[in-house]
Image (cartoon, rainbow, N blue to C red; front, side):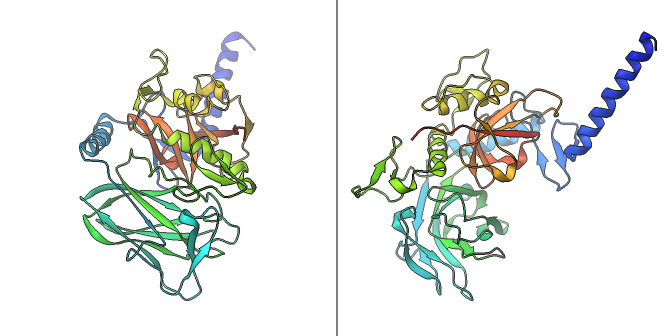
Length: 369
């Protein structure tokens, strides 16, 4: 075989491999750099390059800029909140060390929905968080219904995991008023649905209220340890899930920090951060990692699949295809969300992972006790 034949054979093999990779990814690239999966989800590149059209970027950044002009707003409604929680037929007053405020309500067969009454000061986008104590007997498919400007939106949540801290349910366009805006139902999964507490905050770039866990304030009981980040846990609950929660809690302090590519710019905490600068800073109290998504993938232990993700895991993306380098990294925060410095939002946000294209894998780096 002469040299020309070898070149053409190699080129043909390369084209074939690219074709196979594209088919296996189940996505078709669109002209603006985004991609659409088989389930219709549009994924946008959010790492070292955005891949989004200028009109998309302008719309997103205008939304965030408008939110920044409004005063900060948050509201927490607990199962003990007078006249703001209704769970007729549910079993109330149950206690758990990782419940918000120490108590929660659980669904009972045949009962209606539990409801939380929220005050929405102005119409606009709000992030909704929920809190529950995780337990294997909890529902694997509890449903949260949120009243929006276009009707009730339902989200299914696995409450058998990710308990004992604020978990983002979604971001919604809500109408101003004071009404029962959130409902919880048992859904179709096994186990009982839990209604514990919800938190509403303004905008997509706002963290949940910095409440202590498992209860707000109070004195420490014997056998209870104080986390360096200000949360309290019993000695028996200091497990891998709590360690991951510490990373997420620390990462949330950075929400709203502006995006800036580094290098060439320096990695500057709380001022300008890109994706790997953000993860490096969050991890630095527990583990040194370099300011590079490619090199960070070499640390920790490999997570077998997306279904095995736990809070605090680093998640990596190859936004230009599996044959290209890793371009983006973030921290899994539970319920399909990740904390990350996004060039699309132009800041650190907690957003749904399914909208970021090119998931490549995850690594688990756990801080010490």
